[in-house]
Image (tube, rainbow, N blue to C red; front, side, top):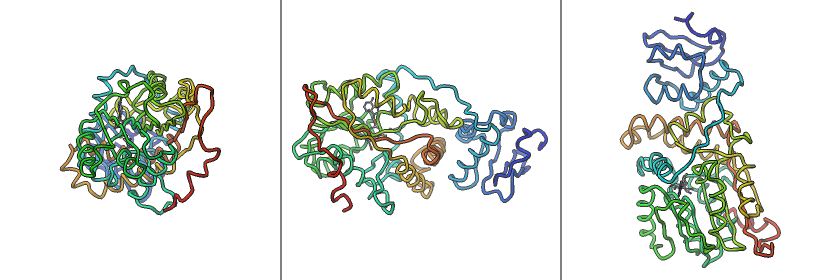
Length: 399
Ligand SMILES: C[S@@+](CC[C@H](N)C(=O)[O-])C[C@H]1O[C@@H](n2cnc3c(N)ncnc32)[C@H](O)[C@@H]1O
């Protein structure tokens, strides 16, 4: 059997071993910390086209079992793919699909409506499902998510009595926080019924119904009359798709009043043409995690915001913060696999384990990034009314 393996596998020095369906063990280097337990003999024939997509989907479909810590599995799977493929990126440009409301609604339900209790297991207490902000590096996830919410509100320069639109409000963590801590009125939208149900429950528990109004609504149905003082979109624009980015940006522009601020916080990709730099990981994510998700480069979303009429006044990369956030989510899930098993299907759990640890790895490797882009809608005469420096953002921040 050893001789049937691709020649390149014979000279590896990875702490990894293969175990075949007949029990035969094939070390690919000394002191293995990970075992890939191959259940399906036909996988051997596919080893010369190995990719993270092939390994990931084989695990999800039960053709492959993994032994070892999830972080070691991801790292060594990537090392293995790199050893066999070199640095050749084995993906064509991803398809940029037409996104209609029905397709997007079913893609959102697929990801977000799996079980609130499952997400509660590993998210922070406010169930904020986006990159946290680690001011000192010593905080836990709850503290880092609270700091992120503060940071967003500060960047938006929220003032009591203002109106805030939260596009893609998730479980309502930011909406409740902004209303409670900054005294604003929030209108938030999500496409996930499960998120909305729990968010509304939490709003009622905090008696915030008069200040926070969340709805099941597609961003394409938002009011376009400039009624909001501020607009925020956090971890949402990854679902929009290339074809609709101009429309999305125009909708943000039309929703905010002249002089108002818009914050777009989301994941961007490394290459300007959008092709993924990740040995098949992007294909896996598109197939099993975020169907119809599309990551643009910073330059593309910046161009579309500008073309819509918004002036970009501040851009910040939070890539390292997302590594930590994802490491934390993944570690919390890994320590509660038994509970997780009772909340979602075996296949879903396998997908989410790979996705959380894999995305931490992807951010660490700089395959993907997280950018906060702050923009302003200038008044008709081109003037803007924002502080001359960023000093106010940091004053008294470390509470
Ligand atoms: C990753 S979650 C982020 C949630 C929240 N902003 C947070 O930081 O916790 C993405 C959110 O975008 C919403 N979303 C995605 N596509 C949408 C669309 N077409 N219209 C409205 N909301 C959408 C999802 O329903 C979900 O609430």
